[in-house]
Length: 418
Image (cartoon, rainbow, N blue to C red; front, side, top):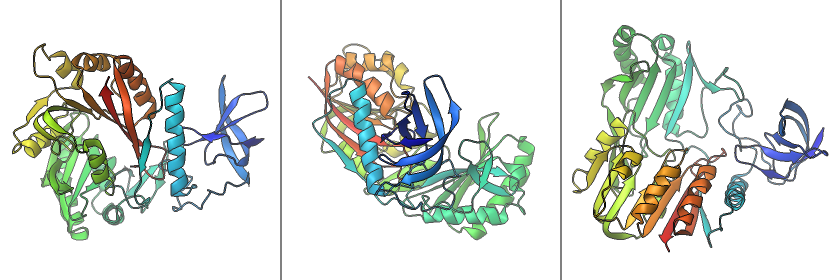
């Protein structure tokens, strides 16, 4: 059938409608294009389409910069020029807020960086001596020997591991491999994820690491995770140093850190701004990206994940701030009346967002200012509904394009108590 693409939707597809009104989602398309598609899956209220041909091309369409598109499931927007990718994300963000009946902030800014070679972390599947990503819409392995959105050091690491995979019996050692480099690309951590018994790990990890260091001299450490027990053994160092805006951060194997090496400093600057005061809370603190930079006399940094908490303590040890190892909900439940109220609360939750109960606790704390760092517009809109009903207003919002070539987006919202 022929379909006119009306708009881009969150998830990477284009939306069209058949004459009887049913919505059809078609990947690999851009707003305004006339395409030929077939129905891949027909549901009660919508259908998904498989793109056959683009009959009328958008002027924003470009040739993908990676030969694995569209077979690879990692990138959804490589067929759009980077400037238009950003515009689609802004349009999706605005529509998501509007559909939730939220007043649009007076200003939605945007920050973008280089669209290629930006990722400081990638994770690939291992089958035998082959490395790859999942094929789009499938669990099958798509073998790759490079990834254009990854930092150059990570591309070198992919090629190196592929060269030594057979001789080091990598397929017997793990099912997944993850590479993580610092911004300067002079340190590299490698994580291996395995379901195999521990005795196989002990015989093989050192041999693999020593062989990889011959290929990649900046190799800093290798961790091997036994998924059934959540335990880790390691070779070399457990952490690297990641410097952002002159601030050094310890980031260990297993700890979370933002993935865009070009825009971490911009994200930090937008979220922190020039705010200062006596007391701030940094919830979902991770290794302390924001907590260490906050210009407040006292900061309470809350993190539940063990490896990140260890890094957080190290990164804040000379600041005199307080680290609380707890999930955010338990921390908020434990806050007694009469304790000093923070002037600022910064939250950076996972994709699931805050949720109703956490929003209710935050409303009870009633901090004068909040900064909400979000990686999902739908859960952001849901949480903003609760926070605005409790007396906050959104003063400003910025879209930080941390994930070029994909539909993912990061937003930073600044809220004030009315």
